[in-house]
Image (cartoon, rainbow, N blue to C red; front, side, top):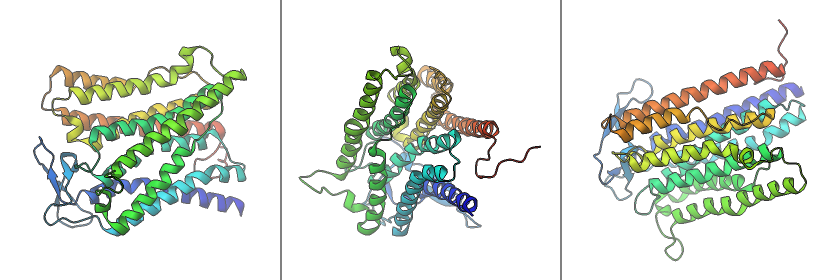
Length: 379
């Protein structure tokens, strides 16, 4: 029946989306099993990781402290099959992410909960896209520095929040082609890596122009030539047609206050960190930033769906500011890593709790089930 097909497609989409996004985490572990050399200025540390099943623990060098070295002795690459699986899962997840709305309209089951699920998960997935590409190019002399990648992460996050800032003010959500181009490109990069190997990305390809420079240029160019101009143009059209939902400059810019403060707090932490936290724990720091940003984005999505006023300050800025104050004050000079781990765990659990509560409330409000087209039976 149509209901059965719809439930099957929605369940498959959710499973493959989770597989495509979740595969990034174990893949990070696999990618760390290559040989590395210690990053300059930091002591190499070894972390013991328990493999699945009953196998004994194996020492795995933590990539937070190390940088890729393709010329190291006994160098071993990530198996080609891993690159193929990641590329296929990323493409399938991206494809299903694009058809879920059509499926909902076909079955007459479109609700604001679907939009929150779709874009809320996308807001969190932004950090995975950037970090996995970082694992492809590495951080050596031909790779991407951790601070440049941090700035590129913010370009991606800015591109995402800009579309929802636009809808908050115009009532219309325009999704630029930059996201689609990036997803297809990432999938192609993974597949090509399986064929030619990671060394191909380290060599210059045209006039000593490195692939990492092409990667950087594409991200910035998509943001500046596609995402930003289209958002400003759509905002201008709404202004000319007198259809803006907000008219004062303060109310118009209100959704951007928390993202800007998040950027200021995290960037300040990078510059004042006694132990150079971004160089030591880049992936963890990126994930912390991405999680806080995802919560800001989800709350903005809820506000624009319900036509309510966006709150100027997200509460997650407070624990980040408290940790930053402890780092700056020097009260715990040897506990910065612990503080980052605790902060990241706290923000992650808080964001998951927020998502579960909002989904439950919206499901009760619309009298629907999150993963089924069947209506709840009345008690």
